[in-house]
Amino acid sequence: MSYTHPQGQPQGAARHYINKLREILIAEVVAINGYQSHIAHSDIEEINQAWHNIMLDEKKHYGWILSLLRKYDTDQYRQFLEHKNDGAGPKEPLCLETQPDYFYAILNNIREDIKGELEAVVLYEDDFPDFPHKDIRTILHAIIVEEKGHAEHLTRLLLKYDPDKYDDLR
Image (cartoon, rainbow, N blue to C red):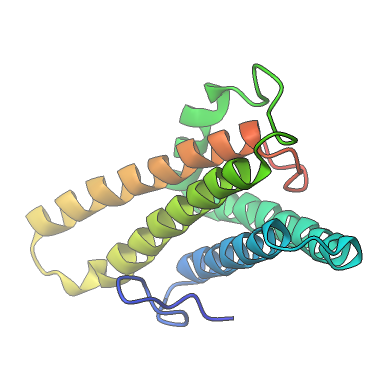
C-alpha cells in the first residue's frame, strides 16, 4: 500500500529502521481510515462486517508497531510518558447511533493528523544528518521532539474516543 500524496512523505523513503517503523504506522493509519470510510458508505452488512474485522486487525497492527517504536525511540517514549495521563476513555457515552458518519469522520481526521506528524518526523530525521551546522540540527531536533509529542497527544485522543481496541496499546 502506498500513502504517497502531494505534500506527504513517499513510502519507502526512510533510511533508518525507526522511521521504517513510522512508515508502517502510516500505512496502518491509511488502511484503517480506508476501511472506516468504506463501512460508512455501505449498507451491506456482510461486507461491512468483513471490513470491520479487517480494520480491527489493522488497529491491532498499529498497536504492535507503536509499542515497538516507543521501545526503540527514547524521545518517542518520553513523549508517550508525558501524554500517558491525558485520560483514556470517553467521559460521556458517544453518539455512534445518531451521527455515525460524523463520529467516524472525526476519528479518520485524528488518524490522518497522526499520519502527518509521523511523516514529518520521518522527513526531518532522515534529513537530519545532511545538515552540517549544529544550530540547524538543534532546531530540527526540537521540532522532531514536538512532532512526536503531537503524535502521542493525538493517539491519546484516538484511544479515548475510538470504541475499538488497538491491541493493548495504552
